[in-house]
Each structure stands twice: as C-alpha cells, then as structure tokens.
Image 1: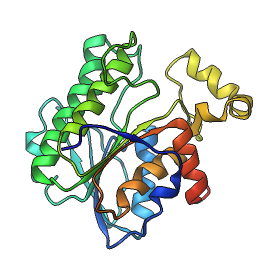
Image 2: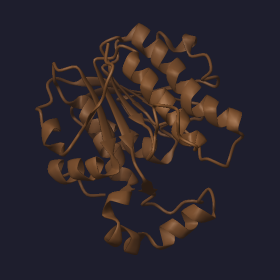
Image 3: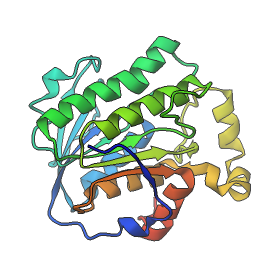
Length: 248
C-alpha cells in the first residue's frame, strides 16, 4: 500500500517503452479533459480497448469503444463486471466550484472518486490510476477552500487504495482549446487573456488536450515500480515538452 507521494520534476522518468496493448477505462469522457483523453486513447495503438463510463451517451462509435451508462456514482457496485480485467483508469469526473452546493461538491469530488476506486480495485487490483485533481489540492484537510479539501481527500484515499501506480494531476487553469460555454465570468475572462497569461505565467496554465494526453500516456507506460506521483501544473508542462505529444 502506498502511503506517500513523490513529485515529478520532469517528464523524463515517464519515457519507458510501452509493452503490449492495454485495456483502459475512462470516467467522464463527455467532459472537456475526458473527451480529449477518449480521442487520444482510441487513436493510440497501445490501447486495445476503451470502456467509457458516464451518465450521458457519447454519440460516437469505434471498434475499440465500449460505452457503459451509469447514473449513481454514489454506488458503483454494478460496474464490477465492466471494470474486470482493466489495465488502467483515467478519472476525469468532476464539477466546478459555485455551480453546485457544498454537499454536491463533496460528493462529486471525493465520494464518487473513492467509491469508483473501491470497485475498480476489487475488479482490477493491478490497474494504474490517473486522477484529475486540481491546483492546491490539500490531503491534510486544512485548506480553507472546500474544493482543495475534497480533492485532497480523494487523493489521499486513492493512494491508500492499493493500486500499484497512482498519478495525481493538479492543473491550474485548463485552457479549453475548443470554444465552449464557460461556467462563469472568471473562466470567460481567463480565456480572453489566455495568450498573455500563458506568456507571463506559463506554469499556471495548461491546454486541455495536452493535459489529457499526459494523463493517458503515463498509465500506458510499463513499469514494475510502485508509484504515487503528483503532477503539479509545471510538471505536466515539463512532461508535455519531454514527450512531444501530437499537435492538435
């Protein structure tokens, strides 16, 4: 069982050759980052199959894709069969602060993650786990920000769940790349000033497609070492630069 995390200084340690094809499960593929993760996984020759789990249909078909609709993430017991024999999971389910009540924020951010991990580990104990956390996530629970506490709670539980490899991603501002309806004024403002913001504060921004690319790539890498790695925004960017993802 992992009890501590190590911070990635650069992407070099991830450049281990991929061995064999992997069976991958993606949670939250209808979201921004999850959608890019799905596209990259389906196009990746290292991926044998993709099981997408979510509340809404994707509206696409692909020979590799199996879609599982699941409405109640407070109880993932019925997903046990779908999660059997998976090699890795990319978990992107989440919501924005201020769009739901505090109770809903905690349920979606922490409780759902912990419940899904419980069932996944029971069905596929050797799976690698890639988790979309957030900047400022606080596993100590001392942060004044509810989002930081709940993301930290989820991180702590994942590291204690028994998975051989857990990757915790803590992006700052995620640039949507494709135009979308922004959740609030702050996001509309950040999108408008993104070119300048990226120039002045490069370690505070990351493109959604690049973040998704790294989240998928790390769980496809073959390693025998048990790991619990934290990717801060600067680490995600360093990994992107090191591994040279496809443009797009």
